Image 1 (cartoon, rainbow, N blue to C red):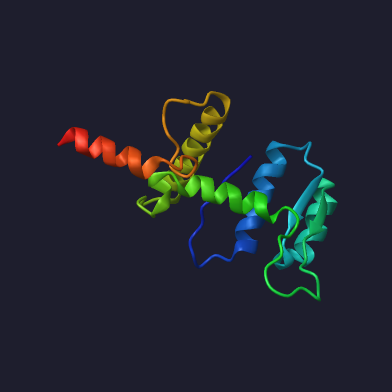
Image 2 (image 1 turned 120 degrees about the vertical axis):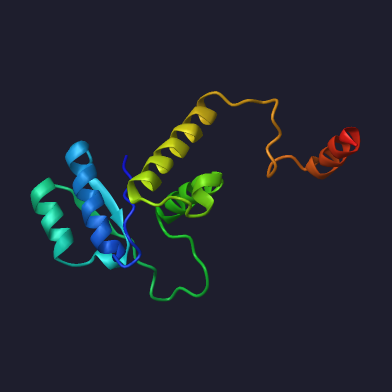
Length: 143
């Protein structure tokens, strides 16, 4: 849908406002946005008024003890984990924010292509339990 890279001295709520403005103008069919507690202010009312979008603020229950999965949060965290497997996104190599955004889009395209047409000949490290012994065989054959 959209990506926005901003400096670390910009709070997520400010960056979120820019990103939502960009995405909601591009995709006017979006009717509901899940947001965390940082977005409980005039911003929500403004977006609801201008774009007709319903904001659902995901709050942790008052009686929560320890870690509990919150609605919609795992989707974001899972996506970030997938993107961080990309070497260029695992560290901040880029000098410009727009380069970082471009790398996010490229990594996302790569993820989508892998979902559409997976290559079953390449072992996936976190899925293949035999990987350590396969690596040993490969190293021994090379020597």
